[in-house]
Image (cartoon, rainbow, N blue to C red; front, top):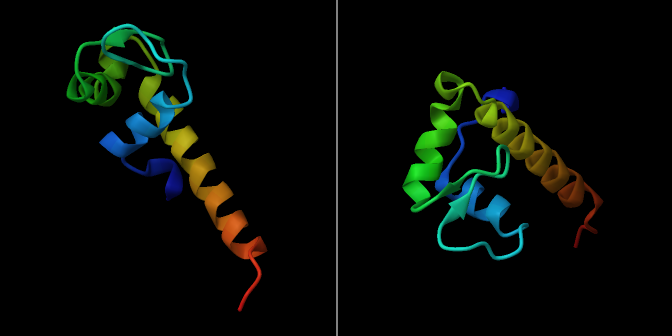
Length: 80
């Protein structure tokens, strides 16, 4: 089920924060293409398979890994 999680704008922003500051715009972390606006990156990700890219798969997998890591951190946190 988490493999089918939808990619949100927040997911794109979080991923982009892992990259050094780029020129003007937002970079797709999968194919490294640069886009002028955040919505254009999200649109690219959603329709990447039509363009011959697998960016949507990359972001879904990245989100699933983040969710797994978050659950592991919650489980490891001491209970009060």
